[in-house]
Length: 318
Image (cartoon, rainbow, N blue to C red):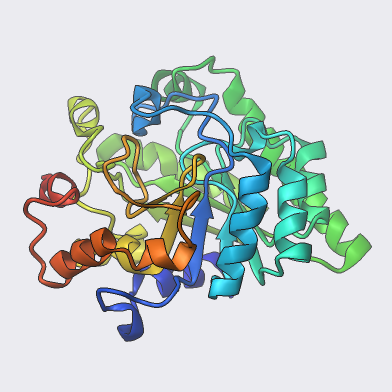
């Protein structure tokens, strides 16, 4: 199963999950670190709306085991930060695969720190999927949007090329084949045409490349992007080629999101903590997943009326 099939399986919200207290989600993203070395204009993380540091390793291991026992099948070792900043990332992959027994462990990176040595270690540890978020058409735009030196843009593409060679070598050495993917934001107008040239260049390096809409990130970054002439989409509607209705939002029903400090969030873009549904340092994963607060939020989504909830501004945007 490729990455887009997996994404679509999560965003479709199967009937068994369209209830106020669904079973454990198929997929969970866990924030090993909230830190990032970029400050992209389309990402609200740079607003520093909550504390950003690394997850305690013991907490990670406990939660990884608990979530697997609860029925989670796919574990993403990232959330809102850049996980290649974490010194023990490869060991986290190995724990998830070997000790906790997850069938599928995946990772998304901005690519700047995905060096050959780190990628090789993660793939040999059993990583099943590595995706590069390739959201910039050239070095000038990278510097403008990511707000770092433009020379890093070449590093992303070089790291992607190296990752392809490493993936093939690890497969030959061990028989394990990590999927290699890329995604990009589907911008408007001239930017869309510029990105098409970039995507055509990197597509041969990956197994799949796909587009994502420009999200408003719970309406936190909309003003900045509108000023650039881009129109963010309301809600989180999945990937661009398989958009879902904003309500009910799949993120509330089929994917868990765990912050570095052990909070279970209802949103892919919980930059300020308003979507926290439970404290995993105190309560079990299933208790938090089916907490009264989470149940009430899902009931609002099922009614398609989220007025007065944390989701109101995100869905209403635009």
